[in-house]
Each structure stands twice: as structure tokens, then as C-alpha cells.
Image (tube, rainbow, N blue to C red):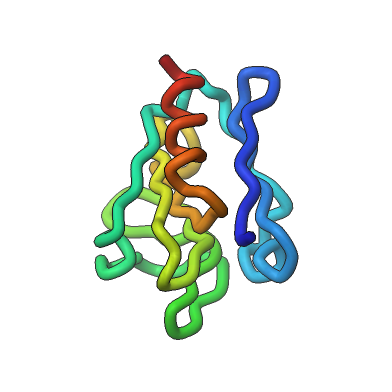
Length: 116
């Protein structure tokens, strides 16, 4: 598992697991549910330009940390081969979170059902 995703006290919590915590330089990301626009699975996103890494880790087929591109900042913590869960945010440091998780369809449903 790369990331654990939970909903608690009207907050979305993303908790990188194991070595991913070290690589991403994040212990957790906490976002108010009112700032979560939605979640989806986007298998093409890993083929797009990520932008400039600031800070984080990039290895062939693995992205972890903050990336800035054209006025927006995204947080990646995913390896190629995982189905990317993309969480769109507003009024937060990150515009989106791109995560590798166990059971991505369930995570997308959990998030989308929590914000409706």
C-alpha cells in the first residue's frame, strides 16, 4: 500500500505508508471535505508532464512529492502500474492529489459519497 485514505471529522486524510512517507517528505495531508471537489481514476495522468519537482522524489516509474506546473501545485505519491486516484481540490495548497492506493474504486466512491 502506498497511501491510506480516510474520512474523519469532516476531513480527508491521506497518510503515505512505509517508504512512501520518507520519499514524499509528508507524514500526512489533511484537507477539509468542503474543499474536495471530487475524485476519479485517471489512467492517463502518469503519461502527462508532472512539472517541476519541489520537493520530492522521482525515479523511473515512481513519483512522490510536490510538483508545480503552470500556476498549480499537485502532490503525487504513486508508482507506474497503479490505477491513479486523482482528487481535485479547491482553496488548498494543492490543486490535486494523485495517489496510489489499495482498492482505488472504493477510495473514489468513499470520497465522492462523502462530499455529496
